[in-house]
Image (cartoon, rainbow, N blue to C red; front, side, top):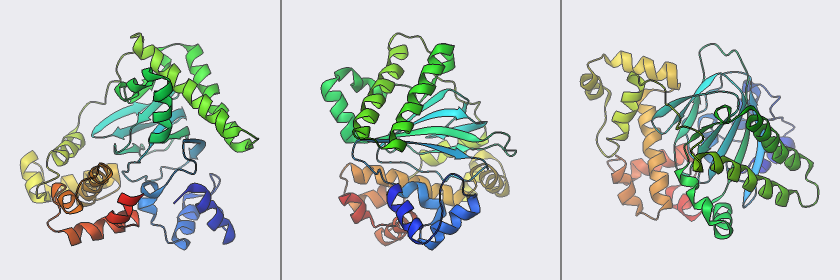
Length: 315
């Protein structure tokens, strides 16, 4: 569902779902609209064909489920004390960091137990068509996929941090004002932001981001990633890592907000989305991501995303 359509439906019901609404209020609105809270981020579509941007603020440790998008997502972190899981790697993020999340790559924020600082970020969504248009005119942008997933503007200079802060906010202000030609301004602004992101890495000014020290959770996620096509169960996993089943279950509940089996299903379905987008046969996709039969895959996919695999392929 597109954000503006969600807002329209909520308004028609006399409900509010903006950043000022509490987690409970937002959850209640989604339930009224028959949208599952846990799969909400999976189902968001872009409102505009090329690029869009908005500012999001979380003041509680809301559980954002593991998800992916069909478009590029760029996050500029304005404040927050958290880690970010990208694929199977965790990164500590801080004010001024820029996250580049590619289509099909699973990701989610990991909040600390004690939420001490609001999570404030500017979000930019860029479609494949938008990227293609940029690359046709500026071929150097083909290097976008080679950029690290985390850019620390603090490693460049204080001036760079200030420039990016202003640049990302410029796109948000244009989107909010919706003055004539605002979409062109947002597109041009995004092009400049990406160019400025590219330059320091092209010249070697900024080092590769360092992922957090690997823990049992990271090894477990890598274990799942390597075995998506296989039968995965808690008993075998615990035996492999020489820990108890309850240790694994409690770890996923505490750090990921979901059960171990729920995480496995999320990863399988995200991998399935990527394969479907690449044109793979649906029954072959189901088998490749570990489902024993297509009907089970169909039910899980529709429950997670609200649409069938066939409908998703046609989007």
